[in-house]
Every structure is written in structure tokens, then in C-alpha cells.
Image (tube, rainbow, N blue to C red; front, top):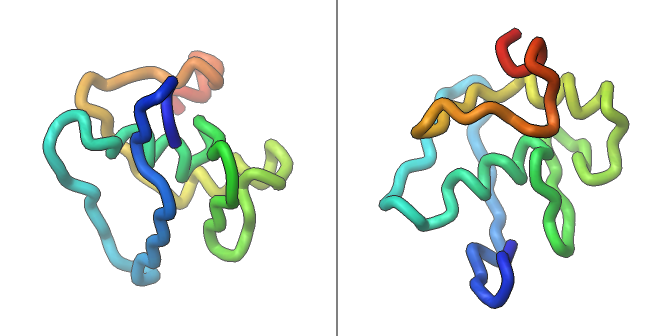
Length: 92
């Protein structure tokens, strides 16, 4: 993923153990939020795919994406709301 000429990350592959809690930690500005937003479909990769539980989220329906998002708990530093979601969906 990049913004302008700045590459945030590329060639990422991640496998997480099923049924366990995992955390993504790192210094400020290293792309954690961008990675998580891409993982749950709020941002789209420039190329490649994002596969969660066998489903490529770049190709799934809104209903499928909603179900996949329920698998994740994301806590952003500033309690950000998602611009792509309604107020109800942001707080539900």
C-alpha cells in the first residue's frame, strides 16, 4: 500500500492461529492502522488480494464483508470512526 510516492508496506503475508487473540504492535507511523483497515476492507490494496478465512475480501459482497468484519476487534489510537460506515454501524 502506498500514499503518493511513500510505500507503507508491500508483499505482506500473515497467518494467525485460529481461536487465539493476536495484537499488531509497533512504533507510530509504521503502517499498522493502514494494514488493519486493509485487512477488514476499509482500504483496498493496490494489487494482490486480502484473504480472510478463505475469502478474498476484495471480491466479496457487502454482506460477506460484514460477516468477516465481525471476526475482528480493532481499537484505533484516537477512537476513529469509519467514514465508509453509517453512524449506527460505527457504534453497533
